[in-house]
Image (cartoon, rainbow, N blue to C red; front, side):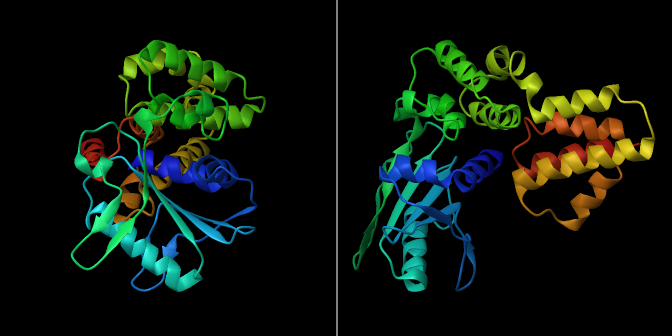
Length: 281
């Protein structure tokens, strides 16, 4: 899902901040490859803290349903990491969307022969100040505990506005809107983020510029296609060739529409349905 990919990107881009949050310590951090040996299996984010010789494995979850179930997956990851690196391992499952499902409150795998423990963080139980005050964690702030959605989103927008680098501000703003969609209605998000802040984001800036630019049609189509493929790859990973082919033949206008539609599309089935509809003459 798009939200999981956003979290993975954040953890890989700001590993020190995530390690400081989850391990409460200062250590140089190296991001490990996320493909583990022996019938490759991918974890959302694996970071290695060199000075403490410890691996921090972060698993981001929007849904509680998983195949295999999350507790068994954590045991599987743990065994593979131990076999490959033979160092202490801290595992953390971060649930993004509020739920009462027991999996979100389960912190171990147990059967009659073995048990394995890991940490669980439920974002809706976290206090917001730490996230509001750290640009790397700021996109997660809308998911934290609040009794006033309007106040929280207002604080998030103010924190985004304070980021000095325009490029970083645009990037963090885009990630923040995507994650906020897990908790708040689109109209409320746009009131605080889209209308005031997101016009500066890479997404909106690119779409608006494409709408205004006059020039060679081939150049415009190439630029729009590059932008949409970037969004698609971030959201769904490597795409099947059949889907890529359908995107490549879209007109500039339809590519722009796809860029906007991707703010709300999170499932591959929805993307396929959208492309089928737009491919109809």
